[in-house]
Length: 185
Ligand SMILES: CC(C)(COP(=O)(O)OP(=O)(O)OC[C@H]1O[C@@H](n2cnc3c(N)ncnc32)[C@H](O)[C@@H]1OP(=O)(O)O)[C@@H](O)C(=O)NCCC(=O)NCCS
Image (cartoon, rainbow, N blue to C red; front, side, top):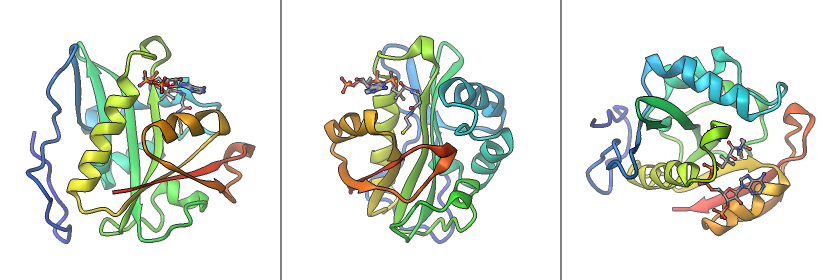
């Protein structure tokens, strides 16, 4: 599947290709509207209720910024997801941004909201495939940085994949403590 770039998007650095080559039967592809239920199931099984995005928020992300939303498919089942918004700001602690309030498709930065995999499919490299595909595509889109917030236990996971730890975020999402991570592209 070829990716549809927004009309004001910067040209890609290389030919865009949203469908990763299947390896071990896993396909990484851009989200489609029919994936909403599967994506919400992954979200609800991956995050505590106060942190999980509602169906309406996931629908907004799918409809508004599908080019920033990848899913992992295994044997016709969507088992993992990574979704995002874009902004030129570096401070991503604003809770409303998760509903894409303030989203700017031409922003320099791309902000990961959720990287999640169904529990029974974890520890086989699916999240890493999603993250690698996402980072490559963000580079193709001309983004300057990938930003995200994570809990303390996952800081080393992102550091092993090249992200820098930027300290604590002001975000209090779900009543948790969040760490800022960034990857320069
Ligand atoms: C984090 C998550 C996406 C990883 O998915 P996955 O497909 O199992 O990931 P992979 O198989 O590609 O990689 C597993 C890695 O995750 C690390 N990991 C997973 N959960 C972890 C945790 N709670 N604390 C620390 N490391 C963790 C493993 O140590 C392993 O690291 P390594 O490959 O560098 O050794 C998955 O556990 C998940 O959905 N968790 C719940 C949602 C969540 O917390 N998402 C992150 C939001 S920022």
